[in-house]
Length: 143
Image (cartoon, rainbow, N blue to C red; front, side):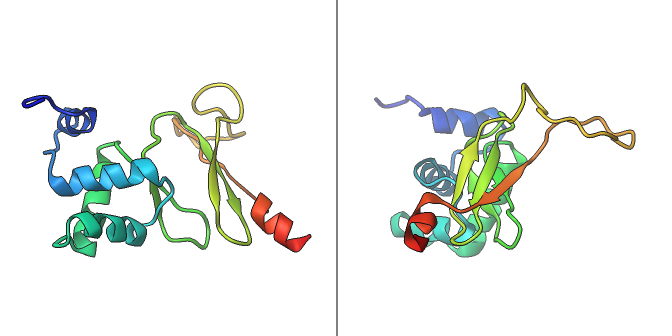
């Protein structure tokens, strides 16, 4: 209906961002393909918005992450990946052979779900854990 905003548009405005075509396209792309790098997001967005640049996608991802609408995940040895699942302190499991990544719910209890033996005076708010292993596809091909 005319005049009705989508929840994505409302979410953008709720954090003080304009609901531009680029931001909406990036959020839509990440909704269907979590744990994607900027290059992959760019390819998807550029098919719908041909004048989009890779720099624009990087800027949008930075803005969305700073606003808390996306989360940046950086597994060791990998480019930054982005997802829309935020504010639940979940963790990730990464295949050490192919780089596939999946979500793992919080390990123990509630945020931050892990407590360090020493904080150095810091107030711990979240914990990020990356589990490494072999995904089912790589395990099957090795068998």
